Length: 430
Image (tube, rainbow, N blue to C red; front, side):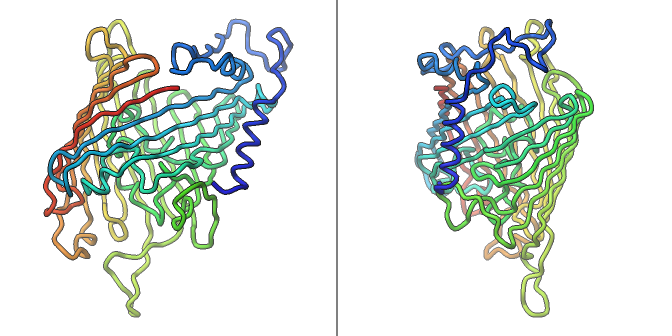
């Protein structure tokens, strides 16, 4: 991590820890909530985390408006057949999150500060054993490193109907997101494959984010519109380790916008989105009169829908949710010209297991005609991934998640046999 960014980060954390105490509960406040407003519920650190309240440190910080979270996701997955070769790999992702109510902490009205540091370790199951284009594990990274992922301030206006965010911001945290797909290990449960493939160093998504701006307008509880503009080349492609915030000539920007509706309180969302890079990219096949690749726009659009279709009578948070996502990208410059995914998630499927989640995800990525034309050997048009998983909430701070995946035509390469992958994720809140 560059020295300048590291010093700013440590300075901010030190300032938070040494900030003056918040006003006493009976002190007058200009914007005090109504007397009948529900009080915020403080986290129960001793019950919800492995390491507890840290001798009262966490409670003291939360009273000042600061929440600290540390979460480990550790995956052990095996390629049982097909793909490149058989074998097992261990991978992990550490999340260090700090969220601060800047109004309570510094007196900045309607402002939130957020920092997230991620640290990745372990092997590369897909890179060395499977060879899937879309991937198999959403915490597998190309280079193990520790870096800033989120670092932003957000300010809301007009009774929280409008907000503006600025800083290091991954667009997959709020765009093209379906809640029901968050349980899956396959990467397409997060950002869809046709967007994840784009850009000179990927778009601003896990594990590398860009500096940018995001605005959200929510005129009613049901309707929303959001747009973001971020640096077109996250990090430094030549230096994959650490955090790098650069604004090099030619980077350009990535713009993304989404509008949607959330009709009900349970999981329910319908949205459409559009994205575009400002720089042009080389066509995969076409050349101009001088023999140089024709430069093309890199853009796409998407639709997503998720709906809870059945709710348990005694607990509305439990039940069956269905989801569908479909997106297109410019096949002149990208491997995939479209991808789609559908499936289901059931929370509380088994009696007495209210927090457990069961999910089935089917994803297909379609290789564009130009990519297949440019290939040295014949390629399959589609790569298809099926995941079946069950997340067991053992305790409030521990979850164990067995998973099975079937990858058909990994890497669109007919020479690679269809892969069977099995293993488990262990998630611990410290």
